[in-house]
Amino acid sequence: MAATRLVLTDFRNHEDAVLAPGPGFVVLSGENGAGKTNVLEALSLLAPGRGLRRAPLAEMARQGGSGGFGVAARLGETDIGTGTQAGAPERRLVRINGATAAATSLAEWVSVLWLTPAMDRLFVDAAGERRRFLDRLTLALASGHAHHATRYDAAMRERNRLLADDAAPDVDWLAALEARMAEHGAAIDAARREAVSALAERLAAQPEGPFARAGLALEGWRGDADTLARELAAGRRRDAAAGRTLAGPHRADLLVTHLGKRQPAHLCSTGEQKALLLGLVLAHAELVAERAGRAPILLLDEVAAHLDPGRRAALFARLEGRGQVWMTGTEPGLFEAVPGGATRYHVADGTVLAE
Ligand SMILES: Nc1ncnc2c1ncn2[C@@H]1O[C@H](COP(=O)(O)OP(=O)(O)O)[C@@H](O)[C@H]1O
Ligand SMILES: [Mg+2]
Image 1 (cartoon, protein in one colour):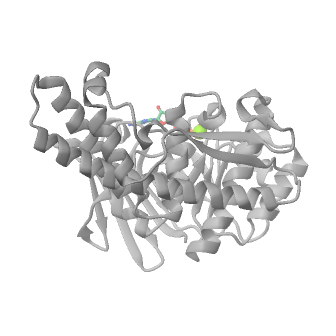
Image 2 (cartoon, rainbow, N blue to C red; image 1 turned 180 degrees about the vertical axis):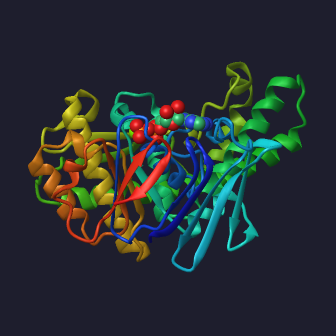
């Protein structure tokens, strides 16, 4: 899976950038603030969700531009476009081969996964960040995951609102919402568990190498649709008092341990945590390529700069021939050891020039 053409229109500091990268490594270098991460963010919008910065859509439209933005990509035979229009800066439009589509359906066409400096704190952050990370991993293995998550969240919000507003809420309506939550919640939980166990198995079977191996476990709620429906029905009064739903897969957490050190990830050094995350993402990309028969597009923002030359070379070697891998850095020299055939761009002040 590779974007062979990428056009950014009024996307952040890129007024009109056109890229025609090859299918393997794509290197973006340029000084701080040039617009490298912005290109990766544009690519991350080819997946369902809010992209790698989790920013509001209105923020992405170029200041001084038309008010909307566009990201268009060609992937194999498929044209994917997404963006906003001036009158509705928070409404994301998606087109697949020219036809309007739901953002959740993007997962059927392409998998995009990223590693950014902001994720350095993933193991010490609140559970929500890890859950989102886990959901991205899961989505690449189960394309219906985003659909279930959207439906589950919508039903939960509606249930919370009903419990908060109504002294005597409509019991049939509540039960219908809970049935919807149960159906989609069980699917979410099952897909996550499958992803975690496949990935954990793969990591455990790997030899010790330059990237740390993670042990993985899903913690928090577990059960099937019937259990969840029962728990929700029994928890109405409690949830009304709390102002939120206290049981369900939206409370899960991904527990990560450093297998070599037998340490929980959050106790590892910053460098060890980075290595764990990188090892995890690499193993996941390989798993997806094997399962889906198509490698995900990998976005590695400022990853190379933090690796010693030996690990950097090991990273390039491991990713060679494994689909499209976008890498950014301030120094082109960081990417000297990237194997031949890479597409190299120099990014400066919102322009992207092929080298
Ligand atoms: N909506 C926007 N319109 C215009 N410029 C923007 C917008 N959002 C961010 N920028 C600019 O983009 C630049 C940051 O780009 P970024 O891709 O993060 O740089 P880097 O090359 O360091 O990764 C900053 O100068 C920022 O002001
Ligand atoms: Mg950047």
